[in-house]
Image (cartoon, rainbow, N blue to C red; front, side, top):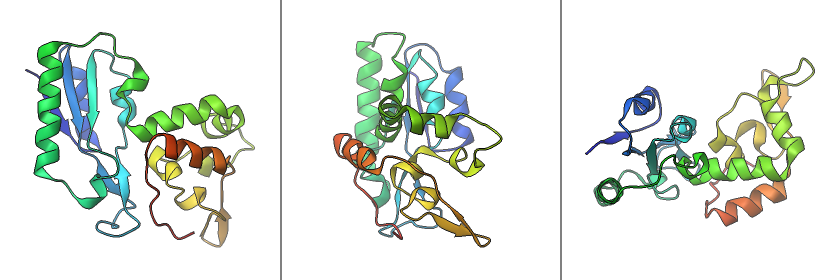
Length: 185
């Protein structure tokens, strides 16, 4: 039985070496860095694109609204049991890439499908486009952190802000059951 348990970062790179029909469990981390046990904390799975791009495994994630409260043994045991059941019963291969994303990753994909202008602004590099809107983690966008918060943020005297359809984001956050963190907005 191949179950890979990891958090954000380099450990996620190993999942591509798992055998067909394996399961990876992403425990997640906390962003913003240093916000543990504060109202500003939110779940961060970072390289979930690695799981999405590995169609011969199934990805599971620590519950997105529970992770900011810390890692609970009962949740880990539940995820391991779920992974074991998936392996024993088998699952269809290839796994749909979207099904291997955490809720915030699925939200981002749907945001791109529904708002092509936004999608282009965060995925297409051009000389006239501010790099700030290309260099980010999905969870920062979903929780409207830094350049995504209302009014942006100031870095070295320069206001950095990225435009997007805020009402669509709020609608999708509700659809995917993602609670909004308390930001500096």
